[in-house]
Image 1 (tube, rainbow, N blue to C red):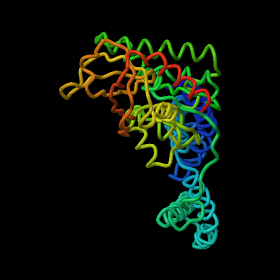
Image 2: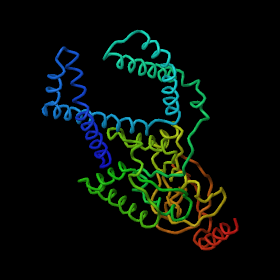
Image 3: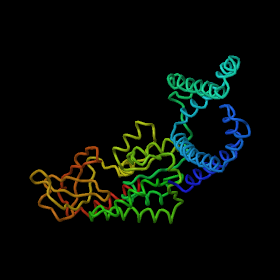
Image 4: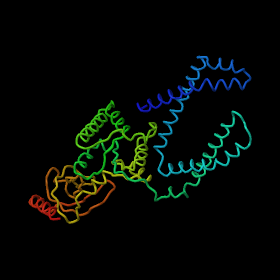
Length: 371
């Protein structure tokens, strides 16, 4: 529990303890008198310090319960959508208005003694509950819950665990293509620390690299950590679900390279910036009949094929390239295939690949510069 939450509980319990201790004597005197005890004896029994202390302790206990209830309501309010908040507010206001004639009838029904305030309180709470429930049951027809109603985007960018471990986010941020405040939720930082403490050497290395990336980001850019975690308070909820809930509450965007998180967030109308999509978008276009200078490094899946890679990681399958494995040759692109993971190029060696390798590289550089 946060320190501010503990202070709230302490203040609420002390306040109710003081109120209960001060109000104990007159209330107990009236209670004893109603049960037929003489006023002198009732005053004497109500003034006993044991009764006052017991009442103060009861008030402190009730204060803790009310404080916890208030914190729960605060967290629940923070995670509610904007439309749900408007529904709740309108429902409470409508319930209070609807309770006025009912309270008037309850007062006119007769004097019920000590039960009169309880009756009035029950009527008010009942009308509020019915009003909120009625509005929630027809929420699709309410104007503030229609599809076009959205909260204002704040420009906050929420980072997930995978994109931090990946490390490319730092280079993208340094290029100036990311605007707004970078935010790292506390549960993402906790997950990174858990990965960094893993007994598996590979996972431990990934976690430590993520922590190093965060340290570099914090030294170069304004980076907030744990500030808005109250919008996703449930620690038992999966990290991806908490990220989406947090982004919806903040009007923020999620930066990730996780395909599943991308799909889940898109279904809940949360904008996602996927670094893999960005990498695919900025790859240079290669067209059929274009010549490339390529180093073949291994065999392909089919007989006679050689495989090489461009500087951006695009795989090029060269037919009849097996004899040239380990060599840098000029190839001509014959086919470009778009896959889910990016582009796959097929090529063939040119007739004088060795002689034209350097010239092909120069031509390609000139074409990129002019294009």
